[in-house]
Image (cartoon, rainbow, N blue to C red; front, side, top):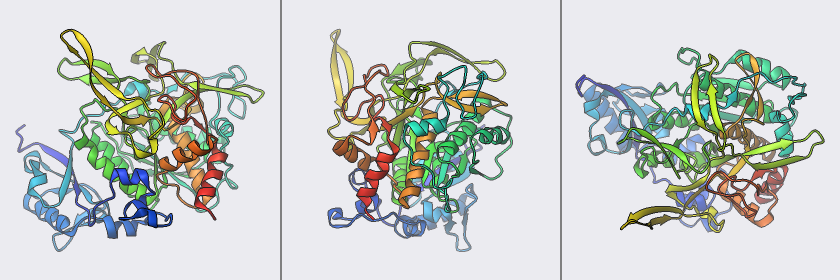
Length: 552
């Protein structure tokens, strides 16, 4: 097929009415203060509404008109159902708020579109964006063999290692939900690249762990697909875990239905959740990640950083997994066609504007005592199979993702936490010497139970199993922040700077994980480490500290 005949979908990120606050500014100040020239003179404010965001940071009018002319000239299709070209030829609808639009047309017409169409700042292309591997390895977070003897609380009489998400929330001292959440319900958005909810499994699960959350799927009618064990288990598991730790909440599942797993797909899925003006989620659990070395550059990351700034302005907390390969990450070496492992953190966990969630191994004894170490099963050989017995992975075990970003510098709120530097070595005259040292953003920020052999009770594919990995820890932690929002009667939003500052001053917001490693890095008793971040949460302590910070 010729270039002219090849049809593609391209996402255009448009210039905003006013310049967005910088990433550095948001990392130093509450987001809406960061938008001012002298934020120190302002009292701690709330967050912006969608209307306020549109008025200040919506799409620039010249850009909207220019895109409208571009669409008309080449007879392009506006893919986004909530955006359109109005009678005056201007791009209108949700694009005015989001400052973005996805168009479909011949690939050739989008060549150099940034320089040809006024107000186009960034472009995400399905054909050129670095591909995010489906990561069938790290995404296989359910060991589907039935577990014997489940009691009504989700423990197992035959296996004390099995634990329910509700019991984990108790260990982490999550604030109790107010009568299973009073209206308005906290809304948790779960962002998935593929897969669908197995409703029958969810119904069975919440008979054991009532109440069932109010679950909405977006789009309301997902495209039909054949059942996919790996992807469907994620959607189902995430809804079960988030709904258990935050009982009675509203959960919106944003499924992209991706088949190519590009950065464009990830961006569109997160954007749909951030700009959902109907359900208005206050916390997002974004399950997908890719190694920074998967061809990603600062230019590729720029649209995401702007999207995350907007989410921060709206008061949305974004929780993401730190990855499941410890301090190393598999990355494709395209020139040789082989898979290499390198000391790379995962994106979007490496963005300083998200809450990166690592993993622990939590063991709770029957007498209520508990012990917690870094989740690390790298020394094991794993052979994982799907529900049909097909082998989908054979290789090393997994561990809590963590380390130092080579893409993003150390943010203000992590200064002084003794984060290691990212070192690149090179041989000169057969002598290995340092080539570059980079003080990068430390990953993760916090952690929760993730061990796949002592993980969460999950119901999927008609049977009970055990779920784990950092992609299971993420919805569990997202549920905590939804509860905090409900208790505080406000959104905590981009909470990273406050969590680090409060933990430094009190040392009581997190259980420090001091034993174990994730490969290259060892846990220790400092404020933060590259295995489990600040540690696992002490929910009531976080609540009381934030109450004192925000005041009456």
